[in-house]
Length: 480
Image (cartoon, rainbow, N blue to C red; front, side, top):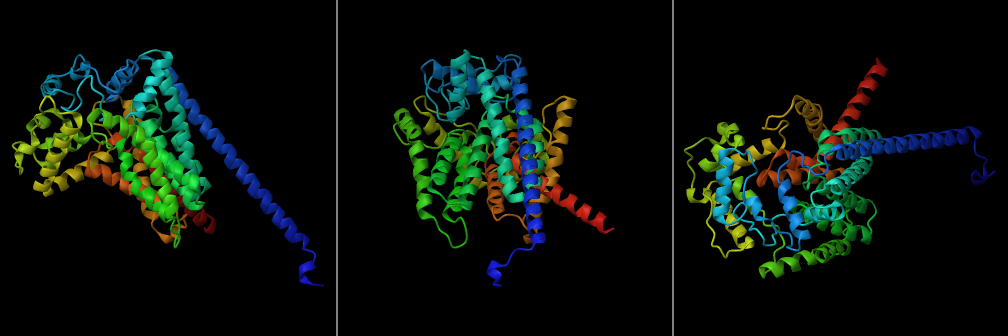
């Protein structure tokens, strides 16, 4: 009888059916575990934000700035700040009062943002969501905003899980999801009126979309990735640094396969989504302004560090005396470390250009000092504990979360480069994102909260190492 019509062996049938049943059982367990962990993440975040006083900010920088922008928008003054922000809150030390006196002398917050005039220093998306919360429940009521951030936080957990499952496997992804569900920093920032939670969601969505495109290239995925990238850029300008990864990932999804049409769709989607922002800025300044005017940060974290005023103000300056020295400083082009002076009629974009020019002059005149400052920023970016005094509970939470994740991430990240790791080829997208994101902050400005967008992926790499180490321990125990 021809082998084509040969009756299959009953043992093979039984074996194949049992394998299928086992796979279905495993898939069901993963799905159930995923659902329960996402439910845990939702309960913790929603419970946390509901427990907070709806009309009070919890500790965190720059929240009054977003509050002022949202209130001004509802009052019909656009995204502008009020004059109150040029005065320090009550109970501040003398050096803070002097700093705000200088801001008033310079005519704007940081000498850059003038009261009552629509600004471009802070991207618009987060203040607009806060304005929606104020519109629904009244000015100062943060509940809707915080609930939105809590939901976005849960969605972020799923997005990271989805990427980790494709790269590191189901068990590592489930472990990462468990850690992210209870991760203290992610829960805490759901209640802080800052860009971190919103940006983290859009950052994770962009990574998820470009990886999905590389697995199954489709035009709509490229267009959606462009729209999500734009929303991320309109939340935090750091997203600009991620565009090269997105372009390369979509242009070259696999060896020998170039997708020029899809790459153009990505760029066209970005251009179209940026049109309202560009038109609004042109109406304000009379010229095209795309990037937020955040170069005050670049000047402050380079030039201003060698200003004795900074040394007397910031604890961070004294912490790095061993690396960058202490007053009197010896720098080339010392005039670049002093606050620039502005003409009253200079707009925000012109003032920002002065900060950019001073930063460039300082860096080119002091390349050795700039290299040391990059090392300072690298240390600050990955620092475990803050410099401000906190409760023992906060310290323990940091040590048991990020403090444990950091060394495990380093090992997992290094192991992922090895061919023997047998990881999906999409790991290179994740590796490139982490390296580029860290590099952007090391070269410009860094502090611990700026690393939050990559912490979930640090957890994923750490989970990969833990699962791999556990498998090796079990294998050795079985052989023994």
